[in-house]
Length: 125
Length: 107
Image: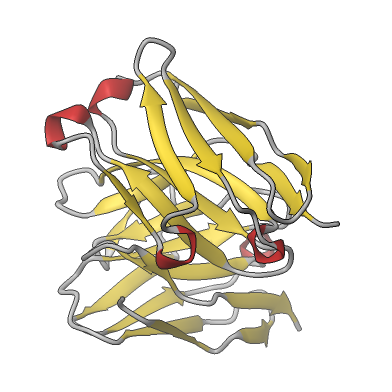
């Protein structure tokens, strides 16, 4: 069974840094596209960024609001995805979910599959 | 970036009602459109992908339609467990983008 367990959230001051982790199991991590999606309190979903599988180049991709501040990486030996967040802003306050981004059955469309409860990041002084 | 416009942002309906949510994209996305359901305190889960394909395990009262730039999510007969927030999302290009959500509430 696919499992994704996010951790590392907490309270941080504006301008600070935090690293989130997503421990994955139940699938071949090295073959997966992995994304981070966030949700500010009472708001909608916002894609943060993605790490493509090694077979697809292993490159990260970021949403404009976090580009240059956030870095996504993966450790294949630990089956873990990371989100390094620097220069945090108040507007980065959100629940952060990690997700696989795999093809739907018999489809060329990739879909998010959220298996964890997310981790809450609060940026406040 | 592809902009996603969902409507309505919220609606009130009764059990048994037929409910339709629309999603319009700012650019052509073929059928690269997914629908998610989110209940309070839980992560979103996919209901429909590729515009009209029902995810395994999702009740058949949910259906999706459309292509190009205009899409719909229909619940044929609303059930108590369907009261939630629904999001459309495009997987045509990066950055991935979501609609702002439609909250379905009990009338």
